[in-house]
Structures are given as C-alpha cells and as structure tokens.
Image (cartoon, rainbow, N blue to C red; front, side, top):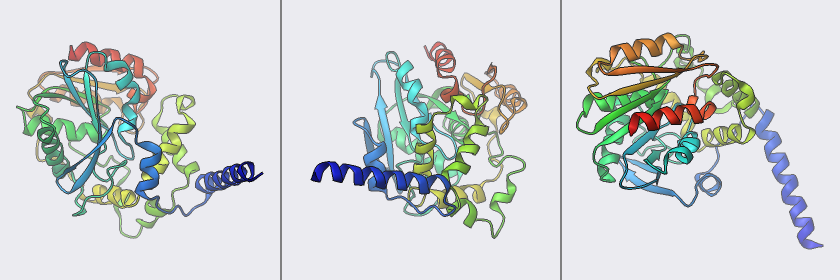
Length: 306
C-alpha cells in the first residue's frame, strides 16, 4: 500500500502546486535545479559567457548553414522547438537562453541592456567557434540580432527578423512598467492565469496556444532572478545608437499580420530601412509566428538560408 499512497500524495501535491500557480496573486521564485530537471534535455549544454551561465542547444548537421536563434521577452529557447524539427535536416540550429531568461538566469553583475546582449552574443559565437552565421530573432531577440549584424558585419551573413523591435525596445504604451513604485507587480504578482491572457494576446489565434507552453513560459519567468532581470532590461532600454540602415547582409523580415504588440506597420518600416531587406507576412498570425505558424515560417526560412 505504500507506493500507491505515495503516488497519490505526490499527485495531490502537484495539483495543489498547479492550483496555486494558476490563481494565487503572489508567485514565489522557482529554484534553478527544479527548472533544469523539468526543462533541460539531452541536447542542453551550459557555457560561461561574460558573467552568465548560458543554456544553449546545438542541433543539426555541421556541414550545413549555421543559424543562431534568439527568443523574445519573457521567452526561452523552447520557442524555436518547431523550427528545430523542421530545419535540422539541412540547417545547424544553435539556440540560447539570453541572460536573465530561461535556464540561463541572472548574470553575476546584474547587467541587462541591449549593448550587453550584443556583446554576449558575439562572445558566445566566438566561444563555440561558429564562424559566419545566420541570425534569427523574435521581438527583443530580433533587436539584438540586427544590432549584432550592424556592429559585427563579418559575423553575420544572413538575418531573419520575426516581429522584431526596431530602435525602440519598449513599445509605446508600456512605459508605465518602468515607473517607480510598480516593480512589485511584475516581479511577484504574476499568477499563471494572468500570464496566460498576456500570451493569448500575443497570438493571432489564441486557440493555438498550448497549455504546456503557458506553464513553461510561466515557470521559467519565475526562475530566481529572471523577473528582476526583465525589469532591469526595461528600465535600461533606450533607442539604439546603431540604425537598421547599417545592416548590410540580406535580411528576411517575417511578420504576423495580426500582431497587436508590434503592428505590421513597424515590420514594413524595418524592412524598408534595411538596404537588402524583404518582407514576408502571415495572415491571421500574431507576435510569435515561429510558434503559431511554424510550418510556413520555417519553410520561408529554409528557402532564404539555402
């Protein structure tokens, strides 16, 4: 009787844990060990880069083009899962959790701004001896990607920007998040139910948002130090010193036509500013097209890369 009783006890404990995460206003941090057991896998590796223990995965053939993929705000390398499945028969895909996100977690110096992320990505590629790469980035990760392409043209031969930020990191209307006195709300008052609504707003078709994806997003946001890092990044955000017009490599701008966070007009502007930029849009798709429309976006990516 001991084993069944123990299993029932664990199941009841998990239900209580999930119920609390779903609705309770106060959400405590989750330890890195627990999250690594849950969200790392056999392809996961860790490397120390510029004060961060970077979680990454390196998959696909070594004799094909190399694509380094960067996630957006609140996200992690898992956002590229479907692209990896679609691309890695022909493309080497290296994806990372940026410092302050996912299983990488906080930096030793507590530094979070776009110039730091540019330095981290350049050092990461050099540390793994990747040579010349293609970069893909969604949202904030797209902002890091085009800045790297502009500042390190010898590193990047092609660029894919998916609903990417431009020179401005914090979108209009979100400035209240960085005002004094509101930090306790996004740092601790983040029940999963509220975060689910944020993610639903990021999808053109919210029915495509999977329950497991919501849990992963919410769990990794609660990694010790990650919520503080997000706020630090938002507070440090300022218009870029570099300009998209300085990007010299061929660039594919991929955009969800139903993105309410970064509307299509911004994608059209970004594609127009980059000298060798072209725009591909996706009907009915929101802010995270590689999750919501993986087949179409990955097919365009493969054609562009190969």
